[in-house]
Length: 211
Image (tube, rainbow, N blue to C red; front, side, top):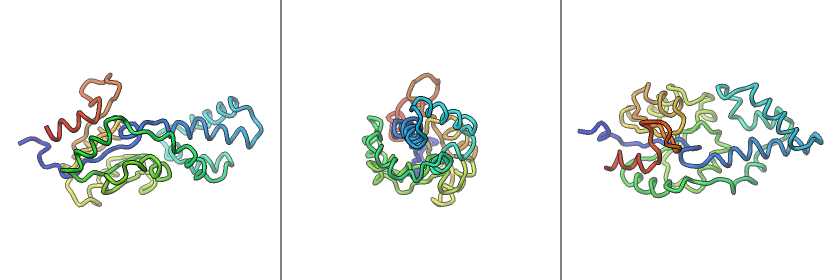
């Protein structure tokens, strides 16, 4: 018997796994600097330098790094909703995603387990939302990064044992090491193909699950 025979749920990271990072990059490195420049009468290049320096002071191990409301408030930019909506055209799924989701949804319950805020997820998943039985945001729902505890909570909410879930994502710590610590079958996705042993496409995941 294959170790994947008992799988009932397939869990996906979102950014870098299902959709490109273009939308988020546009918000963090285009929209916010532009609004900052407009508000304070600065050249956009100068505003971008200031913004990026502030980002680096926080770092990606703190919750604030991922919290768009935190940054809009910090910089005095008001509410992010209108800006997020105006960049929605930058959301783009990877080429194989819809076909993979269609195939896997015939056999498994699909969920999204993301470190993105729900303010982002409503745009990132707009075109593929019907495929997912549940969407989890570690930041919006639990105010934490994608820790082992986050994955334990997913198992509890879904009412399954860890070994019944497969998770795939592009961050080695958050999508591979941490879910494996709780017993989830995890696969690291490296679309560049540079890391040995990692999947290079979600088609590879379909092959492992469906043969």
